[in-house]
Image (cartoon, rainbow, N blue to C red; front, side):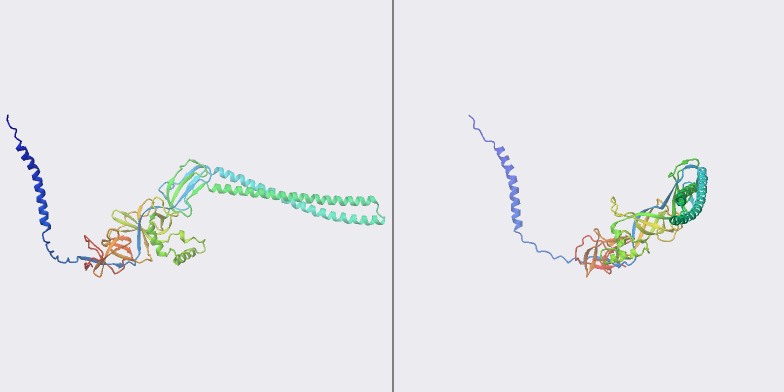
Length: 474
C-alpha cells in the first residue's frame, strides 16, 4: 500500500503570500525608528524680508461743490385741457388747432355754432326790458298811492277836528245826537280810507320787491346767456404759449358741455422727474443744516419766513432747493440746461424702489449749451429745446457742511477700505464713499483726514501695521 505525501508546493506558496506583506511592514517600522532617532537639522537663518515698496497719493480736502448724479425723464411743467363749456356743433376749427402745432396765447382755436345762444340772449333782453317796464309802472302806482295817502291823512285830520267840535257842542246842548253821529261816521270813513291806502301801499311795496327780484333774475340769466355766447369761441389761455398735443374734434362734430377738445402743453418751463436715494438726499439736508438740534430750528424758521407774508409752509416737507444741470447726450455731445431742484414729487418714499421722487424745474428749456466729451464747447446742432420724454442725466450741485476728502479712485479697495501709511506702517481704514468722479473718489472725512498718504499700489497680502517703504506719486 502506497504512503500519502503532503502537498509541499501549496504550503510554500501560502508562506510566501504571508511573508511578503509582513516584510514590507517590518521594513517600514524599522525605517520609522531609524528616522525618529536622527538628530534634528539646525535651522538655516533666513534673511529678513525687505519691506515692500508702495506708491502713495496725498488725500486732499474737498471744499468744492458735491455733485449728485441721477437719471431722469422730462415731463411737462403744465398741461391745459380745454373742454367744451356749451353744447353745440363745431362751426370753425383753426388750421393751427392740430396736434404738434405751436400756438400763442389768445389764439382762436375752435368756434361752436352761436345761433341758439344769440337767440337766448335776445329773449332774455326782452324779459329784462319787460321787468324794468313793470317796475317803472309799479313805481308810478306807489307814487300815486303815497299822494292819495297824504290827502286822506289830511281829510282824516279835518274830520277828527270836526268830530271834536260836535262833541263840544253836544255837551253844551247845541248839537243834536244825529249831528254827532254823522260827524263820527264821517271820521270813521276818513280813517277807513287812510287804512285802505296804507294797506294798498304795503301791497305795492311787496310787489316792488318781487318785481325787482324778477328783474335781477332776468339780468342774471342774460349775463349767463352772454357768457355762454362768449364760450362758443375757444381761445388758447391768456397765460399759455405751447404745443397742442391732442386735438379731439373736427369741424362739424357735435359736442356737449364738458367734452375734451384740445390739450395744450405749456412750453415756458419743463420739469425733470427723478428719484434720489436717501443717502443722496442726506447731502441736501446737510448743506442747510436740517437735522436734529438747534440748526434744524434755525433752518426751519428761515424757510418759514421766506414766504414773504404767504401762509407758512413747514420746512420739514420742503426739499432744500439746489442748482442742477440737466444733460442730454446725443451723437457724442452733451447738451446742457440749467435747472433747480424744486420740490418733492409727493410725500415719502416710493415703495417699489425705496427712493424719494423729486422734480427739477428748468425755467428756460430753449437755452441749451452743447459740449464735447472733453468739456470743450461743441456745435449746437442737436435738440433745440428740452422736450417731454427725453431720458436725461441730472447733476445736483450741493455744498455740504460735512468735511470731505478727495483721493484717487484706485486707492479704494473692496469693501470701501483704504490703506494709509502712517509712521512707515500700513493702517487699514474703512471709509464712506460719497461720489466717484473721473479718477477721483470723494469720501467723508473721519478715519481718513486731509494730508494722509493713501496707498494706490496693489498688494497681494496686506495686514495691519505692516511695514512698507513709501514712494509718493505726483
